[in-house]
Length: 293
Image (cartoon, rainbow, N blue to C red; front, top):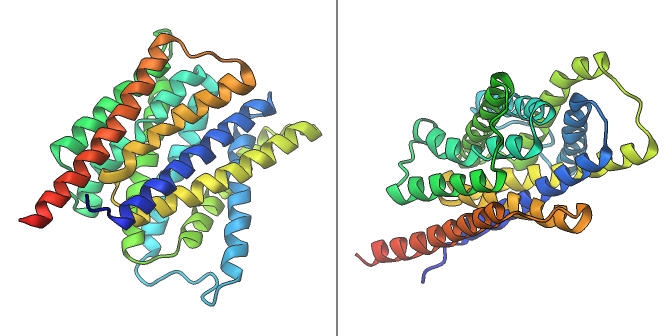
């Protein structure tokens, strides 16, 4: 089988991103009763610092490549909208429900890649992504007693993230640097969150501060990795692997919180992993067959 190095790098990055975001969720949960907007601020503050330090060590510093400014703004706009809506959903819905809604992002990424990147996903791309999403539904087994606005916020959060990832891919095609994309998004979201955080600020205990610092570092790992992933490979090839975040979260929950997955959750893991393996296997063989013709 012919192995595409960029696809492999993209998958490796998106798996690392899934681990980073899982650790972020873990530390956010450990932080306890902290206002949602404070958690959102810390999520990106450390990513901004890390990106800025990284850029200071380069020759171009903070220079944005010509023609990339408007796409960076759109990435920031949709990404921040997705972030805030996701945190609103987390604050007003059961965690499993909000997690499920956020996992709509890979599906939206493939849809958004059609007008933004002019990419045409195959039937296999669409089918495996939809089935993987239903695997997430099995894991979340959402309650029916939910209000409309938080649910819509969760859906918008997933859509915002998916559209933002498509712009990340477009910026990658234009050779924009990962730290620039991460820095702009992190600063933009922090600026939006700051007035809301000041209005509802709660002093943090040392343990809460430590948890949020760890959450910020984990989010930075996830943000850098997800940005790199969509620069390496199209969303239609790798976005399904983002669902492994649910698996990582389940493992952390089992080890540290004693959360034992129910049979429906286990079935969801099997669906997600099965679709990931099938899709990767299909793409490898399909592209290999095409190159022989």
